[in-house]
Image 1 (cartoon, rainbow, N blue to C red):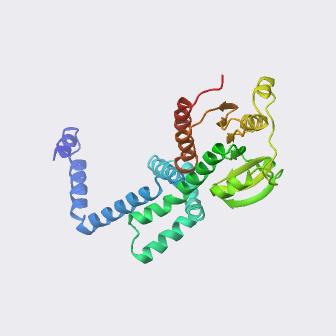
Image 2 (image 1 turned 120 degrees about the vertical axis):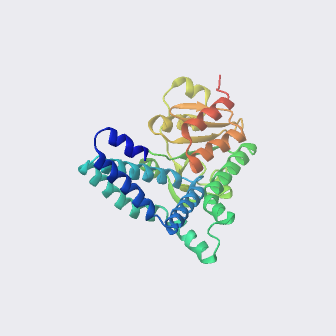
Image 3 (image 1 turned 90 degrees about the vertical axis):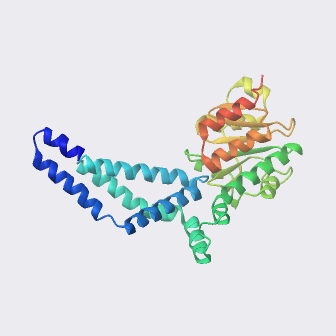
Length: 294
């Protein structure tokens, strides 16, 4: 009644009556089934967020959510061209989401058939792949550092490294600690060169990288470190280096080399890449824990 009185005072009693009737009429048509419908959708969205929170799919879902909100806003503001464009992107995005989330959708359907779609085991199964990659790569790097086995691992990100990949031997294998260690084992065919990782897969090994041209760097560090600095200067990749002489683990990014990376900082870095993509925050974190080479 407050809204009716305000509009009546503004001089339009007819509009006040229409407004009140519209609101009260809508409430009269709101059934208990509508409340159940809303609760079910909210529960499904909540479970979907839980399933993807610690995976890279979460970033894709956030992007789709931003497009959806933008489409609603453009429709409400009567922007037909922008609204049409965003709706078209959302329509194509649904098909793209099916392609991107094919493994997750397959596992979800399997668990629906088993009746445990909301179980902790199912949630863990969707997140286990990324965490498995982190564990395997972390285990391999720490093991090689302890055994004084040199390694050069390049993790591709937004900038493609196709020209680097073709210079090596194609692998296309799943990441596992034994495979990584075997590739860099001394006196094996693929140990001399860089390993390229793309989307959680070992794409190639024994690849040639551009070397940093800084003379000071060349005198103080070995070829692997120069190669790591070289590739990080021309791309947004992150490169992990294991020194066979000092057993020191280093990370090169944006043309800078951070040395003396410990196990905790290495795991934080790998999780930021393969699990949560907290690029800037995590790099700052492990940079504080590391010591720059003097």
